Length: 118
Image (cartoon, rainbow, N blue to C red):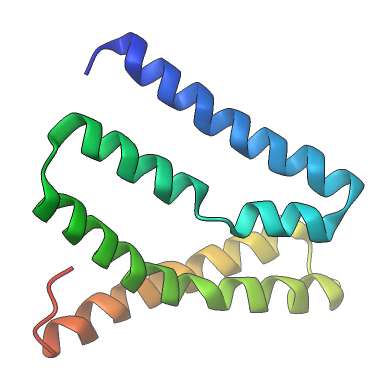
């Protein structure tokens, strides 16, 4: 992939993140709806398909994405609880991210016990 293609993909991802922030300023719920859309995943799959045209690679990617979305969800339950109880944004975010990483590791280990390779 050329640097130009990489820069274009990075710019598109940046525009999506910036749009979520702008929308959330006006309406936190609308921003959450846009943020919850799997836009990055869909774009990633489109770019992967464009680059490889490999259905097995894409299927593996989509399946792994599903498995990793599940352990990322508790962060969105923890973050508002921490913020509403006076924990600073950065500390709350760090705790949420730490929880997510730990749950990713647990998911990988548990999935392996059931024969799922992530």
